[in-house]
Every structure is written in C-alpha cells, then in structure tokens.
Length: 300
Figure 1 (cartoon, one colour):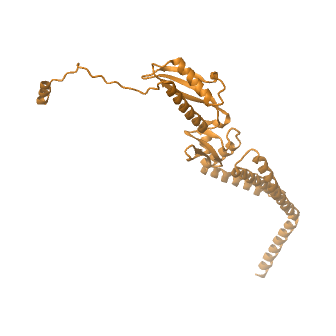
Figure 2 (cartoon, rainbow, N blue to C red; figure 1 turned 90 degrees about the vertical axis):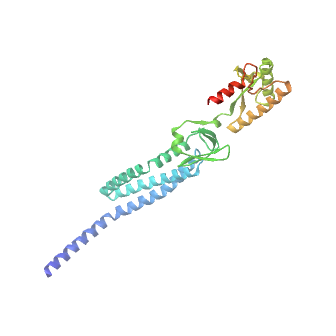
C-alpha cells in the first residue's frame, strides 16, 4: 500500500514538474501572444475610426457607417487572435476554431438568409451614387422621397405623407426610376377642342400661354404641339414642354398651373373644350297601339 502511494506521488510530482517546465517554456510565447492581442485591440479601434471617416464621405447613413466600422474592428481582432494562437503553437486549436466558425457561419447563413440578403443589399445601396437620401424615386409601384437607407429596409415618404418601408433586396432586384438625377422634366398635357374651333389658332394660343406661364420656356418653338386624332366630341391634341424640376410634385404643380392658364385663355378666346354629349332623338316611327298591348298582357 505504501509503495503504491509513493509511486502515485512520484507520478504526480513528475506530472507537475512537466507542466511547470512547459509553462516556463511557453511564458515568452504567452507574453508575446498577449502583446499581439493588445496591439490588435488598439489597432482595431484606430482602424475602425479611420474606416468610419472614409466611409462617411460616401455614405450618409450613420447606422451603416457604424456597422462597417464594427465589422472592421471584429476582423482586425480576429486576425490578432489567430496570430496569438499561432505564436503559442496552438495549431490544432486554431484549426478547430476555424472549422467551428465555418459550421456556425453556415448554419447562421441558412437560418438568416433573407436578413443577410437585405443587409448586403443595404450596403450596396448605400454606396450607389445614383440613390441618395432626399432623392425622389419610383419603384415597385411606390413613388416618394428617400428618407432612410439602412441595413434592413429602404424607406420612402410619399406625396400624401405616408411612409413606405421596402426590403432592400426588393429595391436591388427591381427597376428604380430616380427623378432627382436630372434637373429637367417634361410635362405632358392632353386636351381636346370643339370641331368648330380654328385649329391653327388653338395651337398658337396654347403655345403662347405656356411660354408666358413658365420662365423655362424661352420661345414658342420650345413647346411641342401635336393633334392626335378625332374624338367623339372633340379634336384631341398633345402638348409637351420642359421645366426645371427634380421631383414629381414639382411636375404636378407645373401641370396644374398649365391647365389653369390654358382654361383661362380658351375662355377668353371663346374656344370650347367639349365634354361627351349623347343626343336622344324621338320621332313618330315608333308607334305603340293600345290594343296590341292589351293582347300582349292577356296572352301572358
């Protein structure tokens, strides 16, 4: 019994001595690993701020700037961790860590596929110069001012002050019309005049009215006027001209103003804008005899 105890004690002492020797041997590597982690931590903070300043020049959204800065910091710290494990000769632990991270990343990616798609779409939209906050855009059946682009969704404020929230993935996969990319818009105005009207006079009066109403129209030739066909009650025409505008609201205001002024000019000149008229004609060709009605009711 005593011999067994002595043997166990000797084995324990040998084991402790081995651990002590290993610890002494790895102290320099351990200190170096701590230094690597410390340097990587402060480097992550500095690089994160630097990236944030660079991104701020192109991205207005604070949420996206913060996210990019944090992702950069995590990457730098992760690199420092891998270097520290390499310094301590923990290659197997590093391999296991990478394998585990890959499996966890795959599982998270499958579970959050839609969310990640919106996140990456939000990052892409944030760096697009043709889509900025304050632009007036039209997409997926909605039209309004862009008030926010974050990592989840794309937010519009419509003309009626309603807020529309659209997933970033939908914006990226569908056509988008940006009215703010150009400083000019063309106004289309359709109307009709009576068949008794002097068509040349109508054309000239319409062009003169548009030219007087809008400063952007410098001469009559800038107003396009085309008769489009004979309608049921009127001869129809299309008038179009350019204005300085960057939103659909400005275009609607210009069209409203043009309609008001044209109506005033037509009323003053005695030009008729007809509305559909249906004429009912009664003559003596339709005759109803009372005996025939009596026979019809009696048969029933």
